[in-house]
Image (cartoon, rainbow, N blue to C red; front, side, top):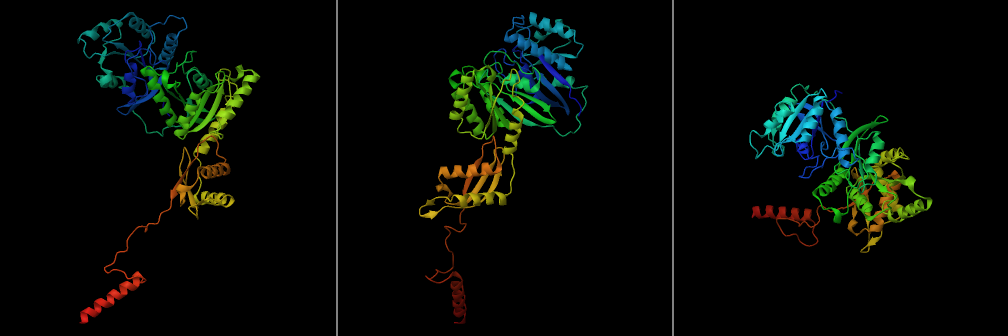
Length: 473
């Protein structure tokens, strides 16, 4: 497979890099709002223009507070520098409204030392004087491309030149992989777990709640198997969502859950199991996703604390007894590798296939062992079952009076199917369909009124004889 060219978007915070990223990738993967510092991690996206494909990296801003004091801005800056070295082409974005400031000059000076193609973009030119971008000539990076990225103006001219020397695409089968959504409250160790699974510092890890505000989609390979890790923003309690960025992030998390095959729910052992953890699991269950639970920071607990967590798990996780729980340390790597067998078992369970005859046989065995109750003096009859979907698996059971089937009996059937097929980690949905008589409620139509006690066929013969006799007269 040919390696796609990599284009990195570089610049100060809030100059419009994420908007350009979304225009290039034709997605809304990167958060876009008028708040400085929204993109803290490297966001990777696929772009295609004139049948030429390339990878775009959106980065956190550099040039402000890059003072070496160990703050989050330094982490953003480090991520940007990493993206610069990964890239084949640099797009340096400046703010035409703000004009050129010292940070722009510093970034420009650094880009001169790389020996890589650099395209200078003067964004936000709407409402400014036509000559405003001219001051950026002083950067020595050539003529700036005027652009209003929020409206898509000027992006075409940049892409024409940017892709001019790129090879055209050759038809290839897209490589996919098992999609893992790493979810959890802020600062429970999701990004540390992602980095441990990947073996590199791809995602910003910083001891401040909410440092991963966007969802990061990262493809990788392990033991010959393809995966896509989705590192999601930590979901905060609703009362604490007071900024647009947090509202965006909750939506991204829920979208990532729906986009995944398996959800790895990370819980902070040191904080214990809280209601928000249960709400997060509820989101995953509502979406029908397979689940693996990782209790993180386990090695920092005393034996008494560990016993308390186990007690809480038994008490509060009784609604998902089929979910595998692992006690891990993402920071030190303890038991992280043990997640993979459970992930694969959960995925296989969510995608299992079975014939209608086999499902019906299991249904008959379950009914024979424990018949359904009576309803209105009549026995509820369950006739056959078939598979209705995957991820989550759906089993559809047909019969009469299925609407009268008690919830306890429905759970009994679900547990029987789960036990026979050894389903682990996935919700199982059992739906009931009422068998209906297609002729029920239809009126008998005849040219003559049917006499009581006379069959329809006999009535027709009598009608024919009557007609023949009337012709003779």
